[in-house]
Image (tube, rainbow, N blue to C red):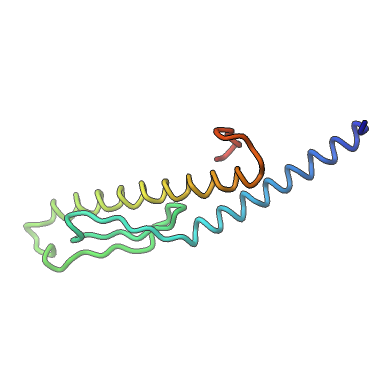
Length: 112
């Protein structure tokens, strides 16, 4: 049987491994791009799976003063579409990481 000191050391090593894997996953998520679209592609928002906005593209046909409200709505819709896709990708990546650690399905680590 392991001594208490050996068990504590093993727990600390496991925590360090999990922390390192979490950092690696966050870095990976920031490198994965998703694209949210609205208005049939008239407005596009590019974001990372971590949720960082990379760019916004607006079709020139919308750049008229009378279209201001529509453009604002489409930007918000495209952002929300990109955010939903980023959350989906992040969820899949985190689930894969947890499975790789041998954690049971549905187990929630703090910060995940």
